[in-house]
Length: 313
Image (cartoon, rainbow, N blue to C red):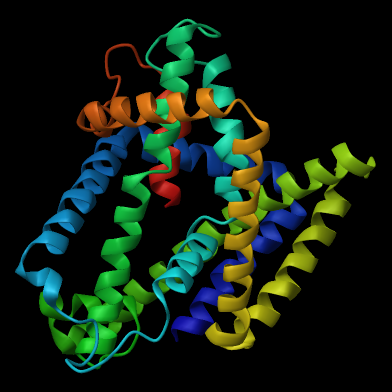
């Protein structure tokens, strides 16, 4: 039932997007603006709660609970585990937006700062740390912990509905309410991945256009998505050990080499100075940024960036 209903809903959206893309974009914008304007406070409070809750679990007595049997040992090394987390969790987005976002904020500064000023530069780096720092990982952490705990510790199926058993009971979790939960979870995951895939295709297309002059058209983006999808299917069907682990470790090595290249050939001292002062500013203002809305000035920047990110994560 979950598979059938989900496929029908996703197929209808895909057909809608293919037949009337402008109409779908308008409808999506209306829905997005409605959720941001009416539930922006909920996104901020929920994400901050995830962060506090994750730290509480890590440093309380619950942090000693194994996500498996008491005598289970980790299947992967810490390095491979981290590389899979970063590759599957953020991937191409971090590589691209790690550069593009602070530049964008510098030109269109948050908190009413004057663009292209020293203050705008400081804010652009701080908010980039904020959007790609602790908060998104806290969202991933809570969902990942819930799934892992109930599947590997309690022996339930690896479904979002299984994590609701303490709240709604096994009967409802296995019944109609659990089916609705799983349908919403799968649809949310599909749309989240579609966002990543769409942005990734635009980024790859832009890079190919800049380097080789290949037109960044709809056709080229469809070809890129098709190639990426095939590679993803090969990786996923090969299993964690052969596919995802190998690709993730390769990604981590390439990312480290890129970072070292930038550190060696770039303004090294400036990079370390900027990192240090931005880290301090990020930690100092983390609560303020976590709860910042603009009900009086009606500034749209937060909805475009922070709330979009929190909804995406």
